Length: 64
Image (cartoon, rainbow, N blue to C red; front, side, top):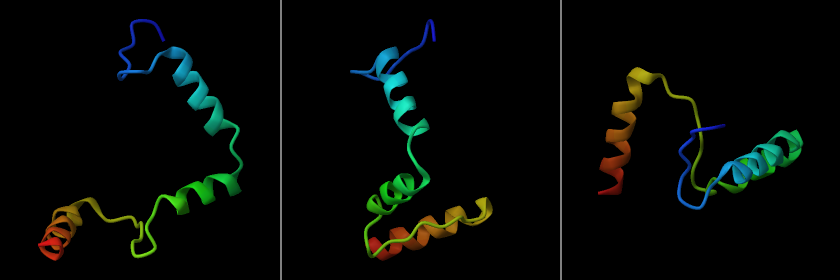
């Protein structure tokens, strides 16, 4: 990882630490982490790329 640019506060050791964490995480732990990141009133889904602008438009309209 020579000549890498890292975000502020990050270095090669931090990157290796985060990689090791996720590489050693069980599938159950990953699912729990993913579910905790989503609000109960939200969902995560795959959207065809060509529909993304329309979905964003609908979300923006709803937030207004």
